[in-house]
Image (cartoon, rainbow, N blue to C red; front, side, top):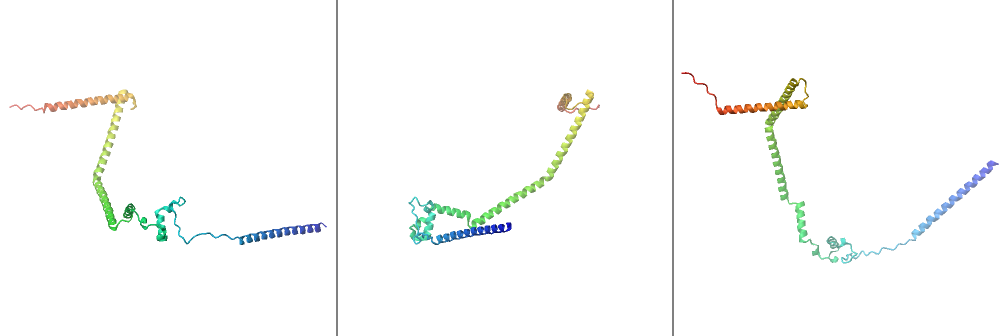
Length: 230
């Protein structure tokens, strides 16, 4: 009993769904056919274009674009319609200033062959001079190289000797300070600096006296030995 009721309800549901789908199909088919009929019945109006008469813009009208009032557009109209355009051919010829500008641009971007050859020769000559100057500079520097190396070695030897002398002087001063004060003194201490200043002052005084003595001896002249007895 339950099985028969379930089968009957299922069959009823299938018939309902089938009817709904058929209705949608009919409606969609009707809408497409209506659209096709509406498209087939459309009759557009033709564009009214006068292609036989030339278009000559009115330059005195404010509605005419500015680019249609230029000489370039006039040349275009004259090239298309000729004398029917109403344009004077003499007005299309460039002015003297425009011709001079065109000649200058032509000479700048497309110079004659002779000018190009002269320019190439000038560039080659300039490159040759630069190369020759560079080679001369290299040769001069190479000739100076032995003297430069010798000077560098001499300066290096002098710096090394000076450093050695300074180290020996510093060691001597430290030893003298140890002997004077009885203990090792910091070379940055005021006592050590005062001692160095005092020694430098005494050394300067000694050099001054030695220089003065040599000067006096030069003024007095050489000492002659006594004459031998007869």
